[in-house]
Image (cartoon, rainbow, N blue to C red; front, side, top):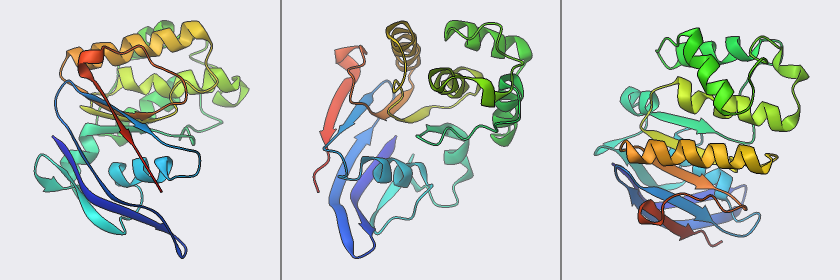
Length: 204
């Protein structure tokens, strides 16, 4: 379980938000909502362990996420910065990402993931030559090439066409069906099962 309790975030001398709290358990998905500039990305980065927490705490299976190797192995974060190397091929990027997470991914697994996201035949292209939509799809392919329980996604379908959005929604649905957890922001609706979907509105 992911537990967020009384979380606050400061940017300079301004407090973006405070008192944020929610929980995620197996098979559940939380849509983080809020106006532009309210701090949604900052919150996702705090929950991912990538940014410091001003107040409050985040725990994974009852343990704080700070210096928690188990948590880092169990979460994938895909943000606005796609964290892909421009000069590496798509295949090399995904294999490197898995290695950083302490895993090994077979090339065939990468090919299957890329095909499902409409990137068949682009596995050996340098990441830099892809369009913005293709880059985002390539980054999202790590959801299928790494084993992780918690997916934290910042605007996952931004710059994607309708077929690609549907492919991402199908991937999310499969993850939830297998007991995974998803925390995401999106200005566009994602057709995930309503039985597993909840919403939390962030206020400044």
